[in-house]
Image (cartoon, rainbow, N blue to C red; front, side):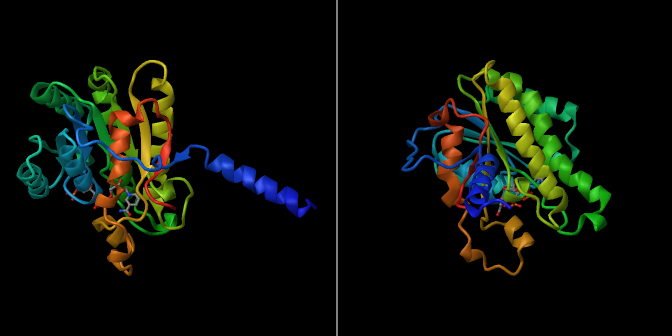
Length: 273
Ligand code: NDP
């Protein structure tokens, strides 16, 4: 038998190992009002929830935002809000990531290049929750949909847009992860598996790009946040007990803007887990 102190030390080391790449926003961080001036940033799933808050926040800090999503009315509403607030005019890209192919990703890249001429950042935010059900019962079709939207589309967009990003002085790619992408949890099925894959994609890409480009690559786990997806996953929860998407924006700004230059390969928590 191990003495208690040895066990304690082992479990601490194990925790350190598991948490090795998890970071939080530097204490006291304050983004400047012009943090993202002249930058072009693509936000997927920009019509609702965290993506909508991020698009508005990036625009409020000077960015021209590309609003990618699948529901036109929602994207137009975010567009109108950004214009009404007097920020740079966004570009709407209507696209259902469920059907993204190498060809449509290439067409999207060409549109961005022609319309805006540059790209400084991508926030991969769009995701499907899928079914909350045991793996034994999981619909294979639904599994594939979730993996397509949450992982494959992010991979395809990143791969196709990388040459454009590489021309920017300090581009940033931010993926969106989840606590269930670090520790599997019963019934979270394809969603959990997709977020493990997102963490792996982030780490692999960050390692590949470290020496060869100025592109930094990180991931954010927003934590429980008051959105439509959270309400779908926890229908019995009172939404006001959870923070708003707007309250998480300092971390999103930090990672998208130049203050995070040199920071790459990390998974961040936006809230205490
Ligand atoms: P929401 O469901 O509120 O918003 C998701 C957005 O993604 C919507 O704008 C939605 O578009 C878009 N989207 C979904 N599927 C597609 C698709 N096929 N093509 C294009 N756009 C699509 O989710 P949240 O804001 O809560 O989540 C944002 C991110 O944060 C996700 O990656 C999620 O996994 C992650 N996250 C969220 C947490 C939370 O507590 N909210 C906790 C941990 C992680 P439309 O509105 O048109 O359907």
